[in-house]
Length: 102
Image (cartoon, rainbow, N blue to C red):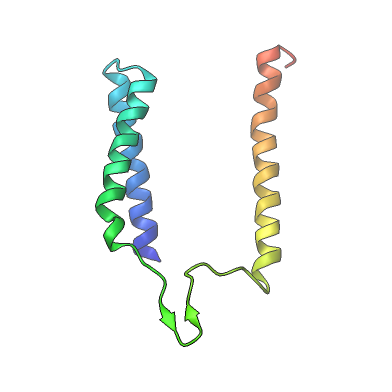
């Protein structure tokens, strides 16, 4: 898990840096986005053969996806509620500032 998290962070940083470089070089936002999307598509196509697939057992094919159960479900609900509240608290003041209410 730690390697996944580290590479996810490195990828986010590299993507942010690439987009900043493209926009700083006066490339329009649509063209910058399409360049980054093309890079992601190529990376996905290169990684596709190495991605995990389901396995087979005596009952049939097994899926890699599993429905959450037990304590995971209420924790996911709490996390979703916290993210909704955070988004509301961060977005609401900006809306008031744009309208001149603040």
